[in-house]
Structures are given as C-alpha cells and as structure tokens.
Length: 181
Image 1 (cartoon, rainbow, N blue to C red):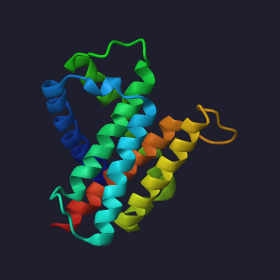
Image 2: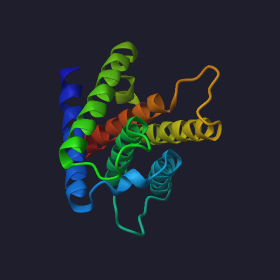
Image 3: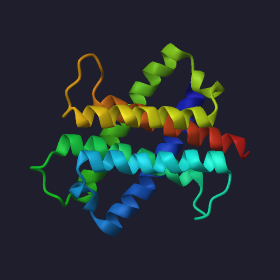
C-alpha cells in the first residue's frame, strides 16, 4: 500500500504542477464553466482516450497520458466549482486555488485508500481500457444526475463520481508509467 501512496502522490504532484502553471498563465477562467460543461470536458477527454485505445493512432499527436491528466484536473475543477458556487468571484488567487486543489486531492486520496483497503488493490489487475470505460460510465451517471437537477433516489452524488473518475485516471497513469519501464 505504501508503494501505491507514493505512486499516487507522484501523479497528483505532476497534475498539480501543470494546473498551477496554467492558473498563473490563464487565471481561473475555468470558473465561468457550469457543472455540465465541466462534465462534458471530461467526457471529451475520456472519449478521446477510448478512441485512441481502439484505433491505436493519434492524428493530433497528443498522448493518452495527457488526457488522463486533463481528466484529473477537470475532476478537481468540478469539485472546486461545487464548493465555490456562483457567488464566489471568477478570479481566485493562485494561493486560493492551491489550497482548494490540495483539499480535494487529499479528500479523494483518502477515499482511494479506504476503497483500496476494501477492494485489495484490484485495479492493479485491471486493464487500462477498463479504467477508461469506468470513467465513461461514471460520466454518464453524472450527466443523468445533472439532467435530473441533482436529484437522486438511491445513488451517490456527483462529487463521489468525480472522485471515482479522478482515482481511475490516477490508476491508469500509474499503470501507463509502469508499462513503459
């Protein structure tokens, strides 16, 4: 489990470094996005990964790893947006973004640790394509919850789905990095 924590934190640190650099470049322009738009951005990235997994050729040249990083960062944006709400200013300081990023990344890592304990790190024996499919399934669930205006009868809310997608993307990046060694 300690190996998983080290790998997980390395992935999150890479994602965070890029996110903070983009925050310095662009500010928090992402604050203008509605939750459904963030969900659609994640969907685009997950769908591109699936297409590349199936076709084995990229016409644009961007690799699958970059798309998983995008999924992680958009999931964190989604969680930040859920907390901030429309009354929060569009422009947040880099320090505020850094704090929010760490808060949700830590919450999500703790969820992963609990689930990893209960599931015995089953993700290590899964195919990366299955992780992609699970992300797509979670996206369809979130879209349905959004279409139902957040109302659920027996299901977890959107935040839990974003956390699961983030964790699946981290697992995929860990598996991708270990397969290139």
